[in-house]
Structures are given as C-alpha cells and as structure tokens.
Amino acid sequence: MSSANCFLLEGATPVFADVDPVTLNLDPSAVEAAMTARTRAIVAVDMFGFPCELDELSAIAERHGLALIEDSCESLGAEYRGRPLGAHGPSAAFAFYPNKQMTTGEGGVVTTHSEEEWRQLCSLRNQGRSYDGEGGWFHHVRLGLNYRWTDVQAALGLAQLEKLDRILELRAAAARRYGELLGNVNGVETPAADDGDHRRSWFVYVVKLDGSLGRSAVIDALRREGIATAEYVPCIHLQPYMRERFGFAEGLCPVAEETARRTMALPFFTQIEPDDQERVVDVLRMATAGV
Image (cartoon, rainbow, N blue to C red; front, side):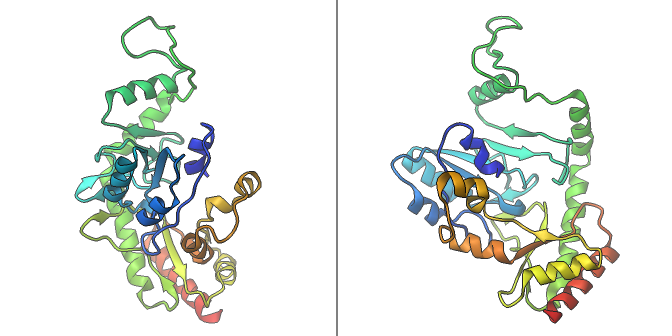
C-alpha cells in the first residue's frame, strides 16, 4: 500500500495501470492509456528490484507535463542502462525496512538532483523548518512532520553502507543458485533475467506457478515442512480499503491480477545457506509434482 499511500495522504485520487507480464513493472503503454486530463504524476515502482522502463516513463511524463516519482524502495543497487537507480534525474525513494537489501531499522532516503527539492525535503522531515539560510533555529516556513532519523539509525545505516557491495554480491549469488536449482522444476517460472538495459538488485525471490497448479496447496506443503513462504504480492487496487473507498474491482489490471494469483516468495536473505536453498527447492519440487 505504501506506493499509493504517498499520494492518497496528499488528497490525490489513484489511477492504476497494468504491468508487463515479464518484468512485472508498469507497462508504459498502459500508463499512457490510463491517463486523463486530471493526471498530475506517475509513480513508477521498480518491482522486486528490477528497474522499470525509466526512459519511456520519463518521456511520457515530459510529454504530458507530469511529475515522475521513482519508487526504488526495493531496488537499492540496481542499474538501468548502465547507471544506478537514483542517478537518472527523477527524485527516487529508497527504503531501509529490515527486509530490504540494507536496513536502518526503519525509514529511508530520497535522492534528488534538485537543490530546491533537497531543501524542501529537509524542511518537511523536520517540522517545516527553513533550510534556505534565512531565519533562525525556530523559523518554520511550511507545515512539516517529524520524519527525522535517530543517530542510532544513521549509525546502523552507515555500517551497512560500508558493506553494501558485499551484501548485493551475496544476494545475487543466492538468486543465481535458486535459478540453477529451479531449472528442472516443472511449473515454476523464475524471475526475469537481467539484460543489457536492466540489472536487478535482489530484494526478494518470487516465482510464478503454472496456472494448472494450486498455489494454496503448494504453499501449505512448504509450510508443513517448516519452510516460510507467502503469496507475494496482492494487487493494491484490490485491497479492502481501495475497494471500499474507490470501488475498484477485478478486471482493472488483468496482467497484474493474474500474476498476483500465481506468485509466491521463497525464503531469501543475505546469508541464506546453499543447503537451505536446496531443501526449499526439493520440497517445492515434491509439492508441485503432487498438486
């Protein structure tokens, strides 16, 4: 819900567009088709750490005079067309919740190329205090919030940042290992592979089951063996709040909805052991064969 909450809290009305069936990111053509005269911004999520089609979405935003908000919360360390996410122009948000590539316990950061936006962000996080050099310590120029990190969070983040390259290497190695192990498991589709334009940062490892398999039965089989797994992830527009407030229903985003019915997350974290991954895949193989 966080990707939608950011603008719902500003009083905006959500308009959802469907995703690409391979990358699971926003389909630029679907974005343009969903736009109206009232559209003001595009929120682009790098789903499961795979970079979105940033150039195409930027072109759409520029053509229609819209803001482009890059939700890179799941993709720290990913690259699009040879450059890291957050370095392409649009301001980008990164999250440091404990299940992300690195953590500060909670919170995150915004990267921006705009000094004006940087000053505004500094002000908003600290009760609207001015950072333009005018006024004193108690000089507040806008309605703000208490979004300050603690020193403890900052220290934790700095320590994590020092070993981020190694963290990303270990996660990429674990993902490759899953890909090799799952190669001969029938009915299980692995995540989209990197290409010349996209290099994923591994946040989670999500597989898509064949439509003939019952996901609930597969998940139950893994859980009976003590393997943590979950449906990953439901569509935002079909969450109870969204249904009740805006009247969204099935059929709005058929690709996303079909994907959400068939995807599940496997155990995945920086220090996962190869033996544990082998056991996960062995149980998954038996589960899919027995459904």
